[in-house]
Length: 272
Image (cartoon, rainbow, N blue to C red; front, side):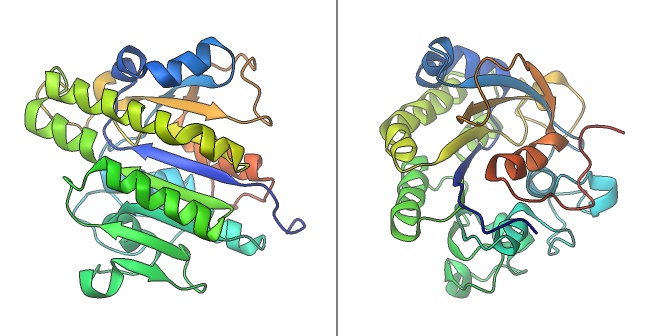
C-alpha cells in the first residue's frame, strides 16, 4: 500500500436524481460549473438500475453479475473490497450519514435499528455511522448528520446519502412538481454546506445511484433510469479536463485516485 492517506473526500449521493433534472434545477451546483469551480460529467449508471445494487457498484467498482447484488431484496453483506475498506487499509478513517442499506452492505446485515442506528467502531468498514431506515427521513437532517460527522471525526472518506428525491419520484413520478422541488431543495442544502466542506479541506463529489422515469420507476435500461450527474470539486481533478461522460464503474477507482490510495484488484475500470 501507499504511504498513509492525507487527502479527504466527501461523497454525496442524491438517491434517484436524474441528470437532466439536476441540470435544470440545481442552480447552485451549476453556478460553480459555469465559473469553472467544478466539473459536471454525465454518468451512465450500471444495470440493474436499482438502489442496493448501485450502492454496491458505487463503493466497489465491481459490476452486479460479479458482486452478486442484483436486487433491492438482497440484504447480504458485500463480498467485495469497498472504498471504505481501501481507505482503512491506507491508514485513513471513514464515516457515513446514510440509508441503512449502506450499513447492511458494508458493516453488518441485517440492520437492527436499536443496535445499528448510530455506530462508532474502528473495526468496521464504515467506522462512524448515522443510519436511517425511513425514506422520508428529511434530507436536511441527513446533511446535518453528515456535517456533524465531518467536523467531529474529520474522516478521510465521508458518505452522505439522501433519499427524499427518490421518495418524491416514486410517489409523484419524475415529471412532477414534487420531484423537481426535491432536487431543487437538495441543491439549496448543498449551498448551505458546500463552502464549509471545501474550507475544511474536502474534495466533494455529488452524484446519484440512478434516475427516475415518468411512471415513478427505475431499474431498467431507459436513459431516465441510467443518466445521472457527477459534480466534482477537486484541485486534483481540474474542471477543464474535457471529460463529459463516464461509466459508473469508473467512479470508485476515481475516488481512490483522488484520495491517492490503491484500487482493488476487482475494480472494473470502465468496460473491458
